[in-house]
Image 1 (spheres, rainbow, N blue to C red):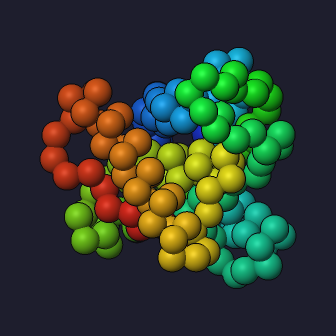
Image 2: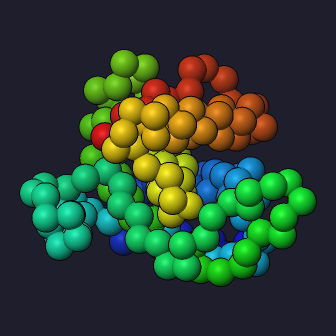
Image 3: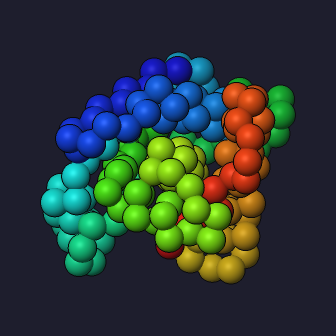
Length: 165
């Protein structure tokens, strides 16, 4: 799996953890091992510009996803996953830091960025949270992936609660 992490934010982030959790999420979702993903970390000004341009909403947001080939997880265990370009995930560490601090289970900016990376991956794979049933499915899957990755890494303590809107 080809995953590029490009930090353009000027903020120090744990790029290896972002890479690792993205790979874990894609593997868990049975995405073809030759698929490609790009993760870009930007400052609030850049994120605000993207948020206005693509969502027509003011202010910076935490994560945005830009799908390319609209890959989906295989429907059955024996199906061959399709190969392709997943797309781009854009993360904003300044928003992530605030959300982590304000979350019911306070956590670090890097933990929030890990959660947001999984959230972005799921959006690239067609998951959404507009309707209550979609939200339950997506956030349940998101929590399972983050918890699984944390357990595999031997990380202790509560997993970050979903803070994405």
